[in-house]
Every structure is written in structure tokens, then in C-alpha cells.
Length: 180
Image (cartoon, rainbow, N blue to C red):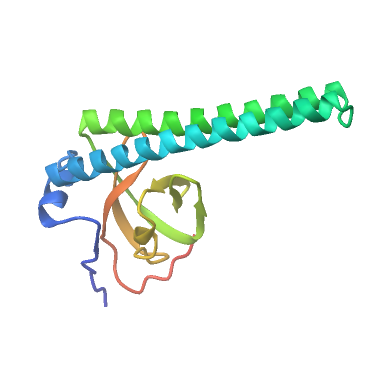
């Protein structure tokens, strides 16, 4: 006998009503704006810390190069690596923030149906990744990850540009043990 579950994740009835129409609710828009503001504050902190760390490393490398502990090519390689990592981190962070801002402005939601596997959750400094069927999506709230049941069929509401899951509802039968 099939039993339909009524599990709703990170949404109110009004949120789901709007999400089913392909739109974000006002509460979701406000929450996304708050997360964007929080990420921007973290971004400025990250940039300040990265610049300070780069200055300390540069001073250390220059001193070691003048004392001839480090050969000049090795010192240059260290500096290039430090600058490269700093640029990569800030670019990745800025790109993700820009995608979230574009999603906030568009106010659109894409609907994705599929089964989740918790075994494929991975962490990133900004978000958790969630594997749904053959695609990888992002979760901004780490508490959401624990609410998904492996093998259950869900309807996910995803921001189209950043691929962030903002809400989900279970649409499959309970106790389906299909694992990905």
C-alpha cells in the first residue's frame, strides 16, 4: 500500500504556493537578501584577512630572499602561489554572490524533481552541496541537509542562476528504499 508523505522543508504554505508558480515568496526574498548581506560582510572580512596574510607572507619571503635562505625563483613561485590562491578565493566568492544577487532580482524559482542521496553531501566554505539524481545543487543552511531522507522523492525549488535549493517537499511514497 502506498502512503504519501507530507514532509515540507524550509517553506511555509505561502512559500510553496508561490514556488509552485515559479516565483519566490516575499519571505524567501527577504531571507535571501539577508543571506546576501551576511555573505557580503563575510566577503569584506575575508578580503581584509587575505590581504593581511599576503602582506605578512610577502614580507617573510622578501626577508628570506635577501638573507639568501630562499632562492629568488623559489621566492617568486611562493608569491605567485599566494596571489593565485587569493585571487581564486575572492573570485569564487564574488561570483557566487553575483549569482545570488541575480536570483534575488529575478525572483524566479525552478522546479526540480528527484531523489536525494545524503552520501554525496560535500561541504564548501560557502555552502553544502546536495546530490539530486545526476545533478549537484547547493544548500545555504546546513540544517536543511539533515532533513532530506535518502531515497525519498522530492520536489525541489531551486534558484536558477546559483543552483541553491530554497525549499523542498516530499512527493513520493514513504519507505521507498531506492538509493542513488
